[in-house]
Image (cartoon, rainbow, N blue to C red):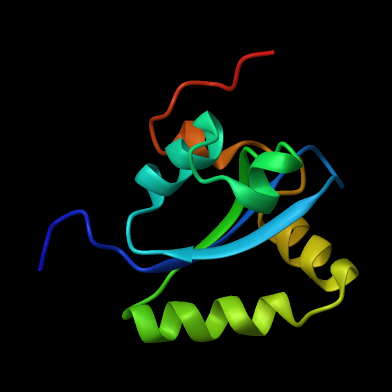
Length: 104
């Protein structure tokens, strides 16, 4: 297995209580960079969703996809409660993973 492979579900936000995007990836740092530079495209790029506010590692991609699907079916308030339980200040967790702060 590649050393960078770490399946996880994640939530990105445009700002505190802003637009949310729930996704799944096997390489979180790479995916965050794609969100930040706009190369991921689509919904996340259109709404400026660039801030990692929650993530949950999983043992397998299947488990991560299952978790992503579960969260996508939740009400918005439940997603906010999930984020705030672990990250009440809505910090950009990407910085804690070694990425530079977002500009502006």
